[in-house]
Image (tube, rainbow over all chains, first blue to last red; front, side, top):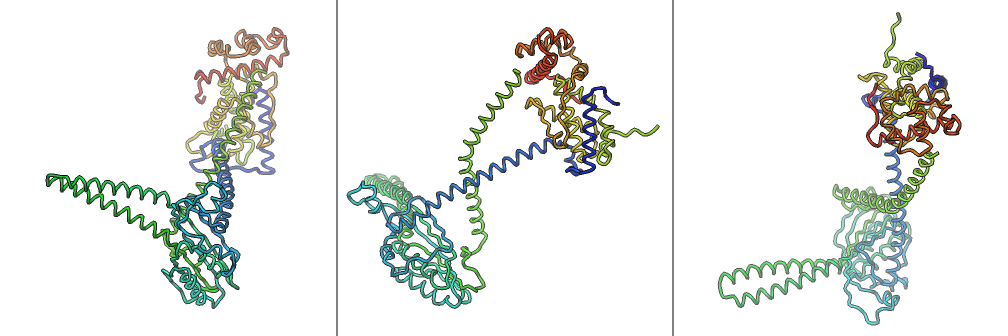
Length: 369
Length: 194
């Protein structure tokens, strides 16, 4: 039945023309679907748009987060060099530096290396350089900070240089007062080594290993150094040790004045428990001192044509290391997104506010006109 | 007597036969316009929503498969969705028509009264009196003369000292605002598919 409403007649003509256009040049038509065919396409598009916008926002946030983090980490990356040169301590709970393909460091007889040697002590306080810079300390302060420093380096060697390099690595460790704790080699062409060296010689060892990687035909595949500040843990343990010792003294005093056997036995039990605590705390303090006093350096050497690749950075490939790496990657991405959201949300709120005001004004104008 | 195709058959046939969609359109266009007019109380908005609903149905007709859903119910599903969006946003977009390259046409003058006839104002007159208080004076006067006193537009225009076109616009916009006000108060008219 044809309507007498002119608008509907025009609309019918418009639809006929659209059909004719589609017949000559087919436009995108959604294919028939199953159960979802009853869902409204408009609604699908609506939610699709929202999801796409949300995804784009999160990707943008992640990008901003990575950019800002890489900006700050590039600043941090400059710190170790400066710290090494001045003997200033690394600050922060963790400081990591990864330098793939780092250019060769100064050779061992370089005067600058001489300045560096002995400067990387693990137990360091505010350096003289810092104090001079701030001008706030005329007398040296007590050295309280506890930093555990570890590092790793992967070196690709020219063919036939593996045995000679192993000897060099061993000599470096020994000359710096350390030792080779672990060694595993494959076919005399590749291998991994764990060095334990005095923390104060950590920087010197790393520089000499880098020099090994800078020799003719060799290449540094990766290198990083980490510093973990355990000062807070150490101070906390010391405080707990002091309290426990005080408690033990009081209990011993009480026990000496006890008159009944039951009191003596009860206090004896308590003294035993406190003593156990004291020993546990002392053990942890000793462990920290050991870790601080000595650094671990993992060295991976590999000849150019070696079958296995110790330079992968995974010393013992396993599910646990894979899990740790995936978790680390996940947390980094999450962190970058959170950082990016911190930048974008205020911008989005301001933009949303302006848009809302404009929309409101437009509607009011339309309503009043 | 030839077999009259069902709505579902027409929708499925319209994928390759443009005339089938036209037949479906002629069968339901006026009912759909009435459906929108009674809910929006605004001829302009009702016409826009009708055009957009058919354009969207045409663009996505390939999605329709007969699985217990009648063809016209499928179209009214799109209509309900469009109506909900209108009540949320207060406007009708023309995305589906733009996608098909269809023009956005204005409602011809002679269609206003024809569509208002579809609305049947009697049952909502009382509710309108209260809702009129929410309008600005120019819209309220136009609405009172046209909807309550049932004066023809030329006389409404004469009493308001404005053009007939302006009077129609005031009434149309006033109706739209009243419809939105009723919706906001939960006083919207029936929304079931007719």
